[in-house]
Length: 465
Ligand SMILES: [Zn+2]
Image 1 (cartoon, rainbow, N blue to C red):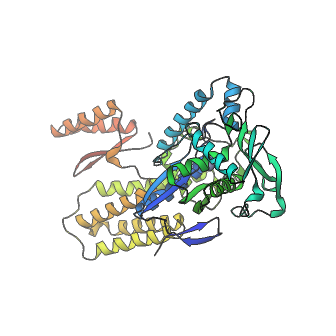
Image 2: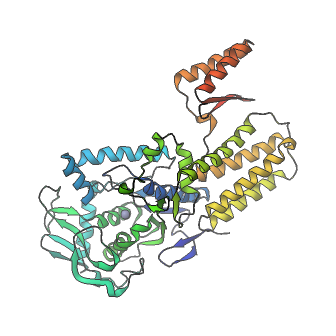
Image 3: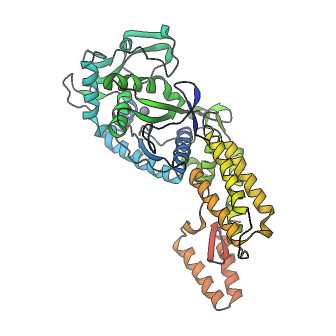
């Protein structure tokens, strides 16, 4: 079976055929670094991460570019309100963003280009658009002439009656009912950062940044472009117009969009008090991998309703997975292999793949995984060492896609806890079991549960009693 993805451009599921398999060019719109990213942003980043990980699992060589918007209306406003240089503000939030990606076990992009470091590429694109008659100067700014691009509106299904060509808009954000010639290059305004340019010194518009940086690293024509549904118009519509008019080539083959996250059935907003950053939830004591599990377990094209009840449920479900793996580690199985078991496990994995191949149907895929664990658990008494290895390797492959299981061996302990673990091992070696048990209790009170396995002691983090 082949992988099928829902393409916003054609509004249907299509077989995914890369331009130059196994290579896949993959661009995702990154953060505007004027504040901490919120849970809605991370819903999109986690969904994109799941899709990227699945492409890798499927054997594609993904080249992932995620831009960092470090110059736009919002970053400038923030720097002005804090009376700080722009780069002090943006460096702070870029650093925080990378920490947050790591917290959520999101694989980093291969390249995180910053807008301020790609001004020459953006200016070259504006030059090309001016030369080809797709752009015009007005005052000190340059605008894209949407009437020069008949395909304008195809991605967002724009009603042509709402096109107001010849009327221009300076703001980066506007709605579909107000589609106008949008700004490519913003002429200098007082107290704003600027770069020299022959049309007048100034700074790039937000939409231009993504077109220029994606093409700089993925070429004029590449495979997948992702972002939130709120990016479809005007951002991605404008990206297509700029890119195709500047290069004369098609821009992107597959446009994938992630639906919104809402909280308790309401739009997340600071005024409603239901606005959360990732940091807010981690500070409240929620396990980041359970947050990840919750964010990825709803299909990316469905609205995700975040509630704390759902988060607790996600936490329990995810721990069932982890506990199952620990239970395999914690005991010795007789040597040997059950005839036919290997191909049975392979069939389960194929079913997981079939679900994911259907436009990344993650709920179906998770259903298959839990059925598999349930079935394996029921037969655990009869399984042999080689069977267990099959199970563990299969789950490890599945987890390379999901990224929700913490490997016990990789869990780093605080040095003082590590010292207690070693001390207990010495006590056990000296057959001082009373001392060893006392140390085990002490560790459990610190939230560390020890598991003695045939390969030595392992541990997992538990909720402190
Ligand atoms: Zn973008």
